[in-house]
Length: 405
Ligand SMILES: Cc1ncc(COP(=O)(O)O)c(C=O)c1O
Image (cartoon, rainbow, N blue to C red):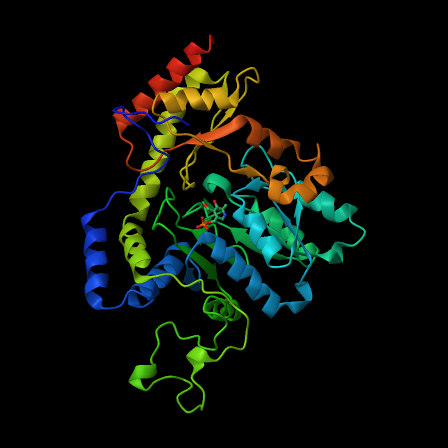
């Protein structure tokens, strides 16, 4: 996409350094400790509180959160190893990659147009028609753009077929579904704090769970499988639970793991934003509402995002209704006018990395393919003001008119 010089540019997200972020970062730098310590611990506690879970474990990305979460399931439920995971074909690639890299087999079902997430009816159909429902380990829905997948129905199906449920809540920081936040409905749920998310810390992720075994397993897995599960090391204070042992637990490993640890700097940034999370969510909702009002004029061209004050929006998705409009040209024209756009992530079976699955799903996941083919998104982030929203509207109008519409 071309760069626009000297022009206003509306990005999908902005990172702005507040006084609170600056202060937290300086505190970390002055503390003499930048690897995981009190800030990470504090972030974990406050994130668990915000979501409404018992435990939260911070890791270095949302991708790591998915991998660590799925690895922990292999330890707690070894009978589920190498089985199938029912998931969405329309997501950021990390969801499928984590499934494959941990030895599970992704099985895609089509989505619902209303929330871009996997449809419970399609999950049920897949399981009903399966000759071997015991080949399935779990259901892994993604709450795309912050829209809740129908968790009540998914939990009912999971119970009927003895499946675990993991939520990929990377894009849903605080969405409320049936009076509860997303991330609290399943065995474990993963979050990403990558740029442009409601809370953004460069690279950061977290897993939340109410299951102590799972939380402890993830603490081990993210530290190369070492035996320690203390959040903050108490060894130098003589309080290590292994102080009587002849081995040093930090260098004793009873599992295979990764280095998925994060840093104090990431947690310091995230903590500063977490203090303002309700305002961030409300501003994004307000922006979606205002954009919807402006864009109602274009209703013959676009399917617009559903507005709800229960949704914590990642961005503003738009689906072209008029198939004569080229998505690429439309996006290119918006970019030329200073409006940053992004595709609606990936339709996984069309990715080269998943070429082995392409023919299996050919023509079968039509809704996901449609959204990927005709959809894109723009920002609705908390720093957009009324002028920015009007600017977006005026540029859309200009682009539509330039297409002779
Ligand atoms: C749905 C989904 N899952 C997983 C991830 C991976 O998170 P990260 O980029 O922090 O690794 C993302 C990233 O935005 C995502 O959108």
